[in-house]
Image 1 (tube, rainbow, N blue to C red):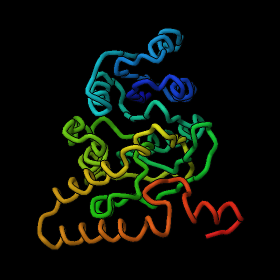
Image 2 (image 1 turned 180 degrees about the horizontal axis):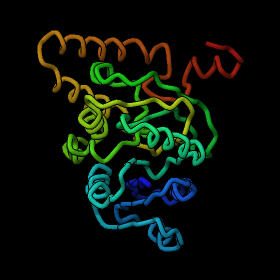
Image 3 (image 1 turned 45 degrees about the vertical axis):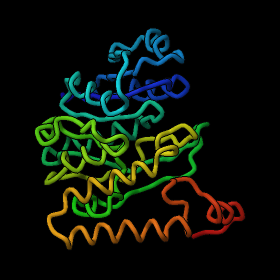
Image 4 (image 1 turned 90 degrees about the horizontal axis):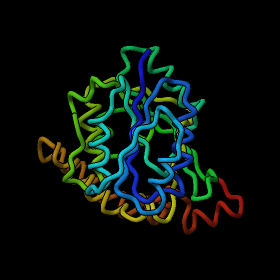
Amino acid sequence: MAMLSVITPARNMARFLPETLDSVAALRTPHEHIVVDGDSDDGTVELLESRKDPNLKWVSEPDSGQTEAVNKGLRMARGDLLAWVNADDAYIPAAADRALDHLLAHPDVSAIFGAVNYIDQDGEVFRTLVPPRFDWRRYLYFGAFVTTPTIIWRRELLERAPSLNEHYKDAADYDFYLRLLRGARVDRIDEPYLNFRYHPTSKTTTDVWVQLDEARDIRLGWARNPVQRGIMRGWEGTRRAILPRISSWPHPEPRGVVKLLRRIGARG
């Protein structure tokens, strides 16, 4: 039976890592869990040493950040299927197993992604997002609509993208998945099978504009002509000018007027 390799980059995430470890350990799908820790000093090493999970492999040593850590994990992985789950996120095990069953039952499907729960630092769900079906060109032109933390893919795809580009600080995943999924059949799973934690120290909170700027540059690098570049620049400029005024974008949690309306029971 196929084996899943789950790669978890970590750095001083001892507060949230136990939930991540437990969620992967609870999968019934044969798996290995590879934690690549960046020389944490918050008790992460002691936590990993205390685990009795035979499927857990880990290393703790200095690195340049998340991207290098994921690349180390990809080199260590032995599975037929691969996934990348950060140290403050967690699978919903039964739902993740159902998603994996779908992938394994359909050999023509190269990867899956699915709905995701956004949770706060206390684990409370504040939003569930069901993305539209996968379309690579839409992912390229508009840079959204794919819940990247849920992606699980077959090893064969690594021939297209064997590693993340460590030049990028915060959008290496976008560059990686553009290369990995181009031309592949990618199925959407409608139910949430991952909890994505949004908290004050997460990269999604602290570096969101750096991430968006890098993603814009990656997108433009794929453009073949001025028309494509114009569409990409026009979309990016429009959403940056309008969406923060009328919604919580680029943050997933309600803010400002949206938050107030939800509190008083408005629906939109």
